[in-house]
View 1 (cartoon, rainbow, N blue to C red):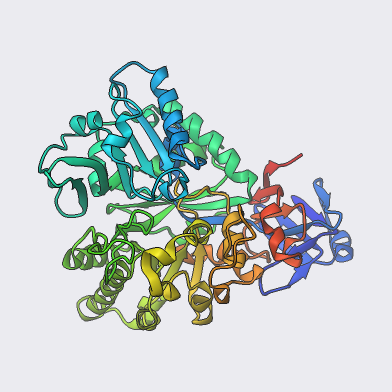
View 2: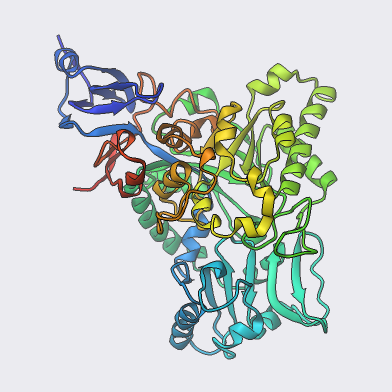
Length: 548
């Protein structure tokens, strides 16, 4: 007698990701989990289902994820003027002027995602208040750089934020002043919160937030994503709320497994094993976000030596070492998983010292053993863009996971050598991370880059700009294979959340999260990655997206 299952997939090329090139033809799903894999002939002999799909040779693989983004922040940007595609400042200014013309004088006008390094009509520098006064002197105007670590404001916006002559923000941020002590409109790091605190946020309206998030989740499913780690960032008023996602889940409006990562202690730091094993549970928690520095694009990533193209500037450490050490230790002691943003080599050093401090103190004061520490939550090192060999050797002595953003390189490769010179030999060294045995997970840092993982997979493999594929590969010796890059965005992500027992590969006992693509890209040419389209996305065996 045949076994009845909820879904049966046959006649496919199903990549299990148990190991490279491991494939099966058929897969059975029941109660949200994979219960069997094998040949089509065996499947038709063993199982019956009211929902049997003939894949007609199409390729299936584990569903994709995003290990680091700001989902709430991305939803916020949808209510701003999007400057992402602007190739000149004039084009960006025209978009802002058009918005000013639509709203009464005195109304805030906010632009997002600008990148001055792509503007062909002006030099590569941050816009000033004088520049933005050309947009309007009747509206407070601010624009946030794509990296999120810098805001430029016109004079009216500076006045409303209380940024006046000789203004000093203090630790963690900077309001640039001209030679006479007047603010020039360039505001960096935590100082940008001066604007975030006063600019209206339409997402505070519950109904609008729900509508916006629901629409975005549909788009996310269309690129094959079924799991995301979304991070709060209080320094920019990027709020995240576990209850918001739980409410969406209860209403059946959450097609993506969301790990909500906060910047504050919360009462229940970890899930029980029973909760983890439920394939239909979509909202997760347990990670604690910490910042050390800024970004290379804004020249605020903290460096041990000056920027090559900005002598006298080493970037910004947004927290002191003693404060960072204790913040990380307290989070870890509370049962949370520390996840630390670090981009420059000084930011990396600060994060590394804090991890070493936490491990040492956990052993000496809390009685933990190294075996217990290695078996527990891994320390997440976010970005890890500039790590020197001696730092990497120290990272190997503690349990860390590198949350990397391969799509960053698609644009950074055009200017990173000018920023950090010969130090770029130690930047974006993802193959070295793999060779040294580190687990790397892939994220977009959206809205820094779009949440679509395929440009990230492209960048990890090709290390060229997909918008200009004739650009020479940047340090091609650090390229990943297609399988490695795919694992970065799928198989490896659950390791960051101690969910590898349930997600990441297509094998019996795992959750039935998978995608079907329009081509067998893993067996195809490297330059075809950017053209991949997802045909179907499944979460716990439920179809959440179909291109049909």
